[in-house]
Length: 399
Image (cartoon, rainbow, N blue to C red; front, top):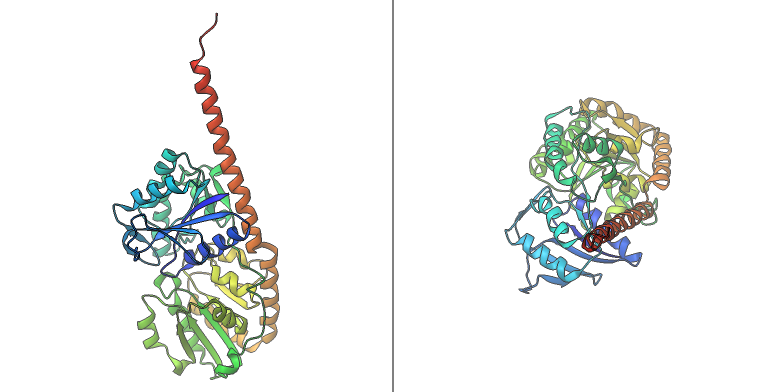
């Protein structure tokens, strides 16, 4: 099957990881993938088509601005997108939505080209609407729902997310729950020399964007109040708009190490293998790939019940805390995890087992392939029925 994938390759965020992992897996399953994304055309080519490292066609869409959260395309982007689809002739379009105005034009474009259209809807959420950020995200769902109703199918990560879209008017038959997955062979427990290099006996890790919705400062406040000894360290892996201000206030004096963004996957895996505890204090989430990667590597995990993360860790696979008063809760939990190593071992093993049971990349791809088959078959069937009706209308009426 030939999939035209509309997604992100930069700047780095969960959507980038999702697109890379899924498209690589699809290629390994002998599908053809054309990757369309917003990027500058440095080659100067008129058709904006290149070849990436996997030798898949890559189409660069023009843009004014893009960030980890949203993208502003140029007025020509939709024309380049439509022209590219005409030339590529894919079996379907899968849009890993980038929060771009182009998202709202996709149903019209694909209807004109008679192409099935699937979306993966990533915006984070908090089903209980307990804070301003979650309310802002709820508006995003309200904005997108009328357009997602015109997609052939929309992929979400949990029952809560599906119920929210259905409540906002998306037909339930058009919403498919396919949780994120990780490569359990690559992300697995193993040896790491990082603790030795840092002279640490206990290693706590946060990995993700340093932004308001990730609530990193609540973690830093709790850590500072705990006053751990020098051999108990906190690693902050990632970058974002709040990094400079937070790094100035929380430093190595509190045993906090800022590593910034790490592009090399092997090094990120090495960090997760060394971690005793992984912490995700987000106010809103979708389904954190970083959390799944940490679980797969056998780290004990603490996360808020934002988005689907609480669902991932429920029933004993990790510690789930409320999105309110995160600092207070962590101030209680962090010393417990630091002083009771058996808790880390038990929860780390349970986290790994949860990944193997529910959140492997192979399960994700299997469900995705089933959805592709269902959607393309339904499109072909609808087209055949329309053709038969049209043909019958041309036949002379016999008395």
